[in-house]
Length: 124
Image (tube, rainbow, N blue to C red; front, side, top):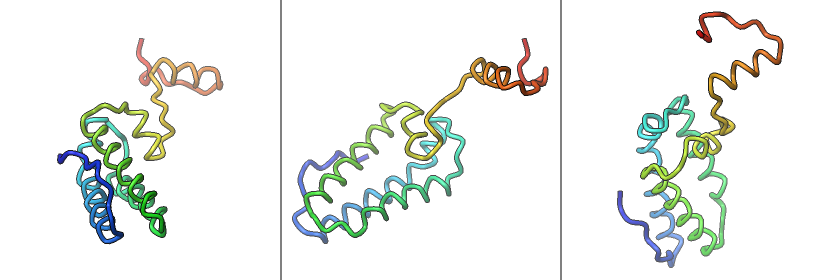
């Protein structure tokens, strides 16, 4: 992965190229995120979520805001690739609620709700 550029783009053409580079880098890292963070998402869903985030800011016309978003996006990517983030951080972004429930917590939740709990699901 290339180092993050701390320089700001001077034109919208420059920012467009930089945002496309960031977009492609994020899409390429989706299989890595699934494997390293043990995410239970489909790659298509994750790529769609990334695209939606970029589409949200498509019509932004303030170059300083575009530069800030590019810097933040590159920083987020670097942190995720270097495993400085936790699974819950990626789950929050990709819409999984961010909560990782252990088997004990899951058992207690089902028990308190009064649901039937099969013996083979939670062996003693």
